[in-house]
Structures are given as structure tokens and as C-alpha cells.
Image (cartoon, rainbow, N blue to C red; front, side, top):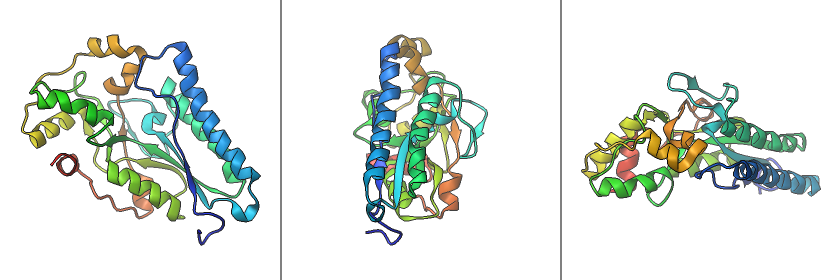
Length: 246
């Protein structure tokens, strides 16, 4: 049990996958699935007796909250962007708001690109690099705000146990890189070249509007986590890839 009150805490995460072509129906499902799941958690907490409510809830969305930019830098004080994913993340976080009124500490964890050998962006990139056909998606200039899987988990635990963590918290490593830099680091780690970019038009043909996930990015700073005292295990992309792939 938490020393604050009630149970130790819980987390809200999930929803319709976004790495696909976005039809109007899919977009509606992406939005609704996230809001409904968070509202169900808020309703369950409200139904609990006061002494059984969790001390903290982590609502995990994404750095897509900020929109995309090649020049701007976003910390937790930045407003939401105006594209579809920004609206999804803002509505998702808004659904968690009522939990604060119930006396629960709410952490809005905005996840960057989680690096893991067995899934996500890195898992999709590995096969082409292993076949000596790897390279950046698009022109490689887009920002790649990443976080090692161990730090992603560490930040969830820190959010549940550290009362200094509250409100928006960017779950990204302190040193974001551009896509081209990420691919060069991946090539070095694997002993493979990074020479064959995937052109914009091919990704747009496959994913349509959803291509913004890989062709555009954002440079995100993890100010709140650092200010709360979290110590990252992996601050640099080379060290993270070395740990995951070797």
C-alpha cells in the first residue's frame, strides 16, 4: 500500500493501433478507444471508497501531443498541436482530468519512441538493416525523440512512487536525434551501412495521413522528469542501441 493513501496506483494505456492508414472510421476508433478506456478508469476510481482509491494514476499518451516541427523544441509547458494526433492526445489527457478532482495524483506521461528489439519502430527497422538495405525514412531530417524500454518502464514506476511527478511528463531521453542520426547509429551498432532511404512517396502510399508518424517528428525535452530527480539509464542513442542489440 502507498504511504500517501489507498492503493499504490495504476495506469491507463491502450487503444486502437495508429500505425495504419487512417480512414474516417479508423480515426474515430483511435479517438474513441482511448477516451473510453480512460473514462472507465475514472469511473472505477470514483466508485471506490475514499480509503481504497489509488494514490496516483499514470495516463500514458504520446509526444504526438505537441504536433510536429523540424525547428521547435517542446517541453511540458508547450501547448497541444493542431494535427489529428495532437487532438487525440489532448482529448485523452482531458479524460484523465476528473481523476484529479477525486484526490488522485495524475501523471500525464507523454511517451516518445520506445526502443525495443522485439517491436515498435526499432523492431521494424532491424530486418532491412540486417539485409544491408537500411536507411532513414524520408529525408532523415525529422526529429526522433526516443526512450530506451528500461527508462520507459522506469518512468512509469517513478511516476507512481515519486510525488514530485505530477501533470505532464515527457518520457523521452535527454538527447533526441534526427532520423538520419538514428539510422547511422543503428548501422554502426550492427556493422551495417545506412545508405538506402525509404522515399516519402512510398510511405505516403502505404500509410496515407498516417505517414506523419514516421515522416515528421518533434524535438522533445524531458524537463519534468529531470526536475523530479529521475536518473536515466540511457541518455545517448549509441549506448541504448548497444544495450538492446548486443
